[in-house]
Length: 186
Image 1 (cartoon, rainbow, N blue to C red):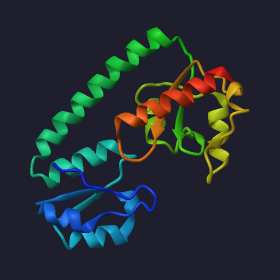
Image 2: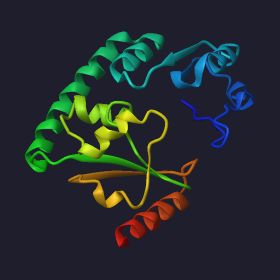
Image 3: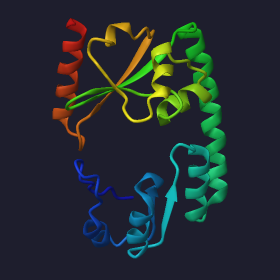
């Protein structure tokens, strides 16, 4: 398994880097589209998976690797762990809501309930519910940005905060911590 670079600003794939890895199989997220799939397919056999449907993605990858039985076993483990987590969270959270915020360089995004991979997972498998403001974001299909002025109105019992500053580095955590501290001051 190898990771490869994606240009954060243009969201383009470095095909030369992938070709230099001489992969036996390429597994890509379906959001990159047909052009990326066609280009990658010229390098090595390629499968495209929808990460919003994690069960199907897991089984598809296992089948492509020639181990479908391992995919089915892993899926059973996944559901078993989700059930244990759901029960533990229900006891701890006592019905509180959860919102998912992502802090970017120029904006803060409040992720919609049914369109975000993480929120769908929390809703369907962990039985965690969002605050009303998150449900309102479903009506805005183009922009999930939330103003600093509206953040205090986000009536969530818990927040999941993610930093989105491009490639992962130790510096990114410092930026996220500082922005979160500034939000708490306001």
